[in-house]
Length: 168
Image (tube, rainbow, N blue to C red; front, top):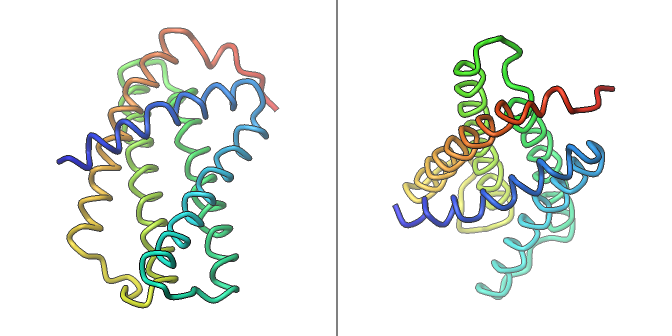
């Protein structure tokens, strides 16, 4: 479960930054999410090339980070909306539960997206063939997201973030 601690340590500050940026400016928040997620994917490609000496095709090298970044930014925005706005019901407990499950699922799906991006760009990996390590990463991301979603929804409910957000 070492990876769980690492995921939690990465997730907490990023989630805080995403929430703060999204509250201040939803468009900038989503753009920040895209930049971080796409950058993470590109970094993985560059690390793979450096470690193996193999070069990923220019098309995949440039396209995969955009796809992964876009998909993960949409997921992150959805998860944060649930954390900041809850389920839209009166029950704070239900809002916290929905925020926790939404953010946990978001983080899990984002990890799957990163893994598929790796599979598309690394010769040694077979597309949609998830290893035990891949599943461990995904589960750890889900758990970290669930904990952060619980904390974030609890805080947003307590501070009434929903009442302070500007709606389009």
